[in-house]
Every structure is written in structure tokens, then in C-alpha cells.
Length: 442
Image (tube, rainbow, N blue to C red; front, side):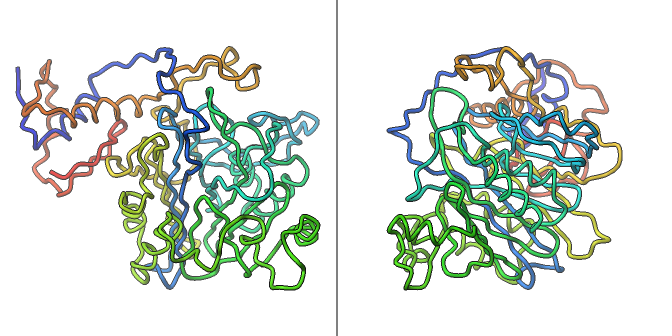
């Protein structure tokens, strides 16, 4: 029996990933959430544009904060031509009209639904969404989820502004609504979106079918669980102001402030509060002029700010994208596919010809017995953990152990040893491997 020194635990974990078999099984979650106990909060999305970044790049980042027992998968869908437009597209809860052509996309999404928390397409468009609440009542009727709108924007648009057009048109036609959680917890909300491409970014914030949008062409911007568009409104729903007047939220005389009108925020104090929106903005500004993709990853890993979330709601997945303004350079998208960004590796993805499905980060499929469309929804929760997620959990258990040494039950093959114990070693050690998800200082 060989004993590995704790300093080499990260390499041992990679070895475990090679030799260990995994068997998916069903489980009924032992964790239940109460809407009364749960503080409504989730997610932070960021963008940095030149001149705040290095080498004329736009840097996009998002933490997806979701119920702590929810699995998020990273999946790829190729571009497609749809000849039969009479056949409707099945989203999470409803069916909508299909379009003639859709673009290739890579998505990070809760494994039970159709849409996505965040993702990118082959044209360098990135979108992340946030849950927001305000004066307008949230609709419980099943419609398009905000996460469905993320995927639809990516599949149907080759620029950020076109993605905004797609989302607001679908919002007007089909509305937004429905439970955004698998299981017994009821979790519904309006949505805000940060949409970026190689040249610019857009903030889109909604309240029911009403919306406002802000164009971002330089500097830094972030969104969190609050409306943040104030008086700089570049596009808007044509009836947004009249509706606010009818509801008595705006007198029609003072300058129109979207966040102040459609929510209960004191926008004068918005940038001086201790909330995640303000803390995220401070972190972006701290690195102005020198922001890289590594900077964005460290922001997503930041715990004191609350951006790297723990508790009932957890940072279940993270994404960072490099969008060069030079169209000759490829966009690079990094995904964790696992929770705990401070202990996860951001693994790169680049759009290229003949990409196969990402099997190591794709969750098992349990349709139709466990279909989201089967009512009542979610009486039983299947085990949706993909191979990488399972190995991440096992690795964390090992790392959290108080043992000083760990035994390997079998002798590794020589090529495995040569991979795991190279002569050159970086500090910190980041081993990119099909099942490697843990980031450790060694």
C-alpha cells in the first residue's frame, strides 16, 4: 500500500478520477427549502470593457447562485437549420415558435431545465441573468423562464443588441413566469440580463413585460439581485413610463429613474450600501486598467463580499469569458461545472468544428418519467450529478479530511504516475484533466 504525502493530494485526486468507476443512482434530497426562511438572493454578473482591461479585450463573468443541492451541467448544442417551422420549440414549461436557424451555444444550466443560467454562442455573445424583485407582482403562471430567455437570446442572435431584441420580443409575446426551482421550493422572480459581445454590452432589466436597457461601451458594469438602471436609459418598453404613472409610482414630472420607480430602492444610496451589487462594483473598480480573465476569476472567488456565496443558496457554477475586440482572435469561455469557485478549476472552451457533446459535464437524462412538464412537478428528484460533479464531491471530502496521509488501494500504471508527478510543478497547481475540478495551493 502506497502512502501519498498531503502535498501531493491534488495529483492523487486526478488519479482517483482515472481509476474509479461511477454509477448514477436516484435519490430523494434530504434538504428542503422553505420560502419563508429563504432570503431572496442569487447570482452576480460582471463585464469589463477597454480601457479597464488588458489587450483590448472584453471580460465577462458570472457566479450562478442556486439552491445548494442543485446540479449545474455544462452542455453544447451545435448550430442547426429548422425546416419545419410548424413544429414548436419546447422550452422548460411552454412551447413557442421556432426560427429558421439557431447558432451553436455552450451553456451552464441547472440540469433539470431547458434554458441556462449563463452561456455563450459561436459569435462571441455572452449572457447571464439575475433574479430581481420590485413593485410589479411576480407571475406564478408558467411562461418563459428568464433562463429560457438566456438560451433563446444566444441561439438566435449574433450580437449583444440583437440578443436584447430577441429577449424583449419574446417577453412581449409569451411573458415570463413559473417556478425557477426543482423540488418543493417555490422560487419565482423577474429577470435582469447582462449581454456582451466583442464590442459592447447591454444591461436589460425587467418588471413583468416592462423593461429598460442601458448600453455599456466602456468601463465596468455589474448586476445583482436588484434593479440598477437609474436615469441612463438607452432603450425601453414603449408603455413603461405610462404604466408607472397609472400605478402611481411616478408623477410624470421628475426625472424618470427606472430602479427607483419599479422597485423600492433608494438609488441615491445604491453605490454606498454593503450589498453584493455595491461590493462587486468596488472589486471591479479596484482593478481598473488591469482587468484580465484571472482578475475576473478572483472576483468570482471572493467570499468577504458575498459574491462567492455559501449556505442555502450556494455558488453552484461559475463562468468567465474573454471576448477579444480583434475578430481574428477566438473567444475563450471558462466554466467550472462545479460549485465552490475558490476550490474549482475554470476549464476552457473554444468553439471549433466538429465538437462532440461534453459528456463529462452532462447530467443523466431521466425523461419522460421525471419530465418537468409532467404535473404535479418534481414529486421525486433524481440524482442529476454528472461525472465531474461526482468527482468534485469526492475530492472535497478527501481534502476536508483530517487524515495526514491517504492510501492508494491499487498500484497505478506507469503512464498515470508520469502524468501525476511531472518534474515541473507550478505553484499554485492547476491540473487540467477531464475529471479534474479542484484548485489547491501546494
